[in-house]
Image 1 (cartoon, rainbow, N blue to C red):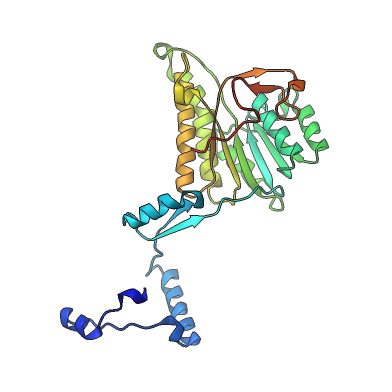
Image 2: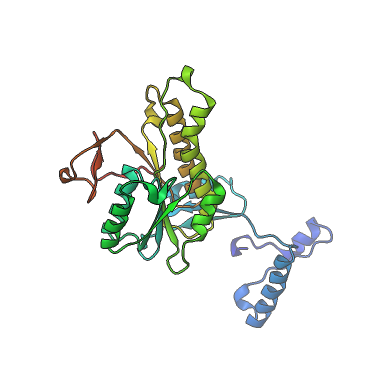
Length: 297
């Protein structure tokens, strides 16, 4: 497939018994003949006789890495550069851990900045959490459609139902995974139950979101990680491990050409809403740049 490597048909026949070689230019062929060729190939692909070449996707911002990978002949199939998607306010964004301070911050930010037409706020208790009705009303005033759902993100079947319920006229365009549980303790005091309590919402929830949305056209897939996964933190071995998984999942998705951002937040403290932060916020990070900057891993 290229004019630079055309061989001499007679030489090919001498060196390879029983092999006939002919070079041709697609532009010199009759378009109807090409149509017949493509039709025959399509039938072979549909029947499974032929299989498409594998495709490896690279974000265009990693083009130099992609070309290096290609030049080293490490690929099988096609290497494709993908363009990063732009924010689309016409769809729905799903926020997990929506009953927490961080989930509320995200929801307010998305609504006020018109970055989501609809918001699906997911937490284990859903509407039963005090303050949820007030948050939903506040978001509605900003012009966002709001759905509050009680679901455990670590329960794959329950999460699948939440995602399936998103209307087709406002398709799912983004995910913000802010769910998390703390159960601190030194390594020697960790129990399987305590470890699972921390890992389930972050690790299982993130993996289910990844699997259930992998075939959707998302613009946004944000994971709320922690600096504890990078530096460690006394008494938070389970929490550090869970957040390290989120960082690794973001890297895995980006290698697959899928959107992913892992935010390794530092310490948080409650502040007066007049002190700044996202509009309507009641919390902000300490010792961090504000507004926050994404850490793409």
